[in-house]
Image 1 (cartoon, protein in one colour):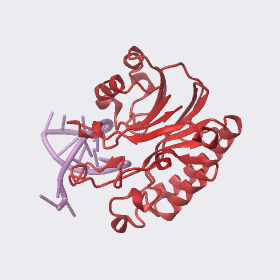
Image 2 (cartoon, rainbow, N blue to C red):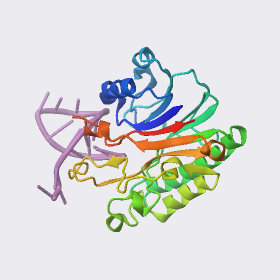
Image 3 (spheres, chains in turn orange, yellow):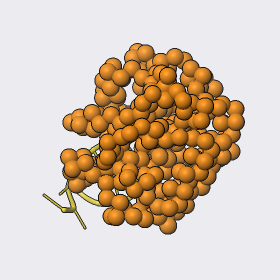
Image 4 (cartoon, rainbow, N blue to C red):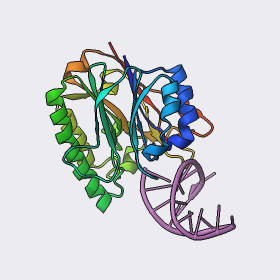
Length: 254
DNA sequence: ATGTCACCTGGTAGGTGA
């Protein structure tokens, strides 16, 4: 069973690339971030024609998440119960017995701003939500655009990024709190090439120079840890003529 | 190189968010 996450930065723009990618990588489940589409504009028919059941939770211009799966999924939850939020950032469903939570974590910049405070509040709510879900669904995957680089080895220039958004102690502490629930960073269960990133700024020729961050993650619960066969970042879509700034991340479960 | 992209409002550009 393969599961993946991809911040597509506008599904309206990226739908052809997504369909192309799914044709080559027919993953069993995929969560999308930054669809930037209200639900009435979501391309459900196109994705169903490609063989996927879809659930989605969007808004105009910003944010927006979706869950796609080859087998039908159920028990869908949009955003986090008990955390009132106008921003569409979380979608959850059960696929083949695995609880899948897809998240588009707030960017939060700059540190000290109102948006940063929102990011911290949101991260606290997420921890509570994941803890509650784990209690009911021990086989759980939390994946998405975390907007957090967990360690310095996830940053192309740790000195320049020190204390900057994605790299603050507060954000890394919240990431650690998620791991403390018994989750594991699937990517780090394996030996990986140094300078592995999932996001490269559109500016500054960052992709060509491989100046990026690893901020898109797949966390698996303790019950699933033994089933993880591989976890990889697929850089190929970032080489497209009109790419998202993020690459998909894929995990394979036995 | 302060070198991008996507989307909005209200335009044949400027602002915002990332």
